[in-house]
Amino acid sequence: MGLMEQLRRQPALRAVDLALADVLRRRVPGTDERVLAAAALASFAVSLGHAAFDPAQPRQLLPEVGAWPEADAWRAVLAASPWVSQPAPGESADSSRPLVLEGGLLYLRRYREYERRLAARLQALARGGIDAMPEAIAPLFAALFPDADAGNLQAQAARQALLRPLLLVTGGPGTGKTTTITRLLLLLLAQARAEGRAPPRIALVAPTGRAADRVAESLRNAVARLRTDGIEPELCDALPTTASTLHRLLGPIPDSPAFRFNAQAPLPHDVVVVDEASMVDLPLMCKLVEAVADGARLILLGDRDQLPSVEAGDVLAAIDDAAGEGADSGEHVAGDDAARGPLHGHRVHLRRGYRQSDALDLAPLADAVRDRDAEAVLQLLREGPAGVSFHENLADPLRGTTRETLLAPWRALQALPRDPPDEAARHDIAQQALALAARLRLLTALRDGPQGARTLNARIEELLAGPRRPPYFHGRLLLVNENNHRLGLFNGDIGVCLDGGDGVRAWFTGGDAGVRAFHPAALPAHDSAFAMTVHKAQGSEFDEVWLQLPTRDSRVLSRELVYTGITRARRALHVAGSADVIKAALARHATRWSGLGWRLAGESTC
Ligand SMILES: Nc1ncnc2c1ncn2[C@@H]1O[C@H](COP(=O)(O)OP(=O)(O)OP(=O)(O)O)[C@@H](O)[C@H]1O
Image (cartoon, rainbow, N blue to C red; front, side, top):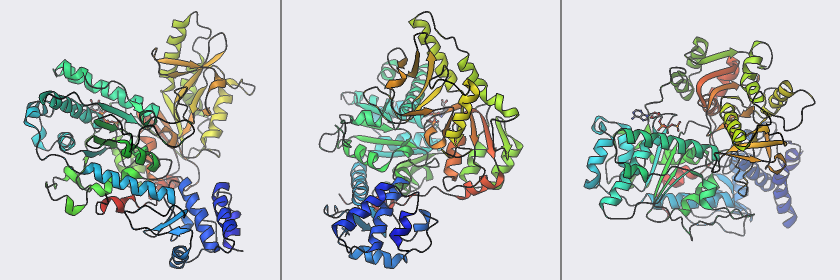
């Protein structure tokens, strides 16, 4: 059987992937099958989060296909094909050819261009900076970071961000990324005032609405602490109090992948802070950095141990690698960065966790997951540190004793009063409902199958509201699956259905009143949200997390998935699964094929 024939039999491959191969075949009937197959796989690879396809590892995409071409021969055929261009690293690819072969990877041209443009712009943004902290703000710096000289990494991060126009601040949950950046923003405001300039215009953004809400809340808390610590109220007042999604900042143009703000029409902000940067995919990160104005400051915050973005690219990891050890290793020597690559040193990794919770002792478990130490993970789970419960080999959380424990918060939602007397009571109940909605989430690795979110949601709905339930029953939790800028509802937003007497409305946080109601028929695409995949839960936190693993290994399982899942928990964590599946997950690293790392580490191409 020919290679294309084999690919056509793979259910995983999408129609759009095969359509690309078909177009090429139709245009030039004699096109080599290996070129057609590679084109289809380059398209399929993007759907799995890769920026390109590696002909040396086709089995990673389609393990069932028997015979693959030998990698070097495959690349040679691709190199000779008129469909494939091979531009020099910094140059744009021939727009008449849909594919690009570079660094051994085969790209769809558009993704290669995103990588090239992103690398060039990041390198350009990284240029410049100053050698020493302006004297005028030294006293405030000392007040904000009294232990700066004792190797405090938060202080180093703030110092680096003052000196450098581009900085990546990484660290696990609760390591103080937001706290540090709040203090940095305060220093920038003070500096502008001391120099008689207008206050810097600051944009605080995150990839999802939920993540934006969270970072804004963390920032407000950090500001409140600064006020109690006696920091000048006028400066505190000038800090941002809200955050927006990246999409909203860039200004979407309806029915277009382009944004209102771009390289030709840059953002008016002097400082752009992006939280949860690990979730930002390659195209969006490219569009963002291109829209950051020359001379503006870009600060990326993230945790590289989390899952990479659902869409193509592992941008944070590539920047992190190119930035090297940076300031936290104490190895940074001003002036020698150029020899090590333009991004070298533009990163600080925060290590110490500050979010103490007597209820949940998560740090040792998160560390063991990050270190891929399966034995330590299993030992910790079995010992059960504070707040952690291991349900070993449990495949069905909705059976037996765990069922009612799981359902309790959702039953509480259903018990909220229906038909409130007036609008104020309606808002009050909606606020209570949304607070209850954040109490517990059942997280899954998969969407389908017995331990998948879809199946578990259907079963939970039936347990809560019976087999003949109306689609939008009182207390149903909803998860929005697409962005709708007109309604101000975004992928990942969580809502709750409440019976207001005159029919059911879906309530979401936001708006002047703090809550907003929508008719269910008006909502963008959505699912139930009692259970959701770990991917969808990125950027959110819940008081209690139940991480349900599948009974069999799956390629979706990875160390990053387990890490992201468990670190969503604030007060209690349940992990259900077998030792074998946990071991298999920890052994797998959610790698992405991408050339961004070498592009960023290489010589500046701009
Ligand atoms: N230097 C510090 N001293 C004392 N407490 C701190 C310090 N830094 C941060 N914290 C506290 O730790 C908690 C977490 O801080 P913060 O929200 O800044 O972390 P984060 O890294 O942004 O977390 P996440 O990744 O969850 O968004 C906050 O309660 C904050 O007050």
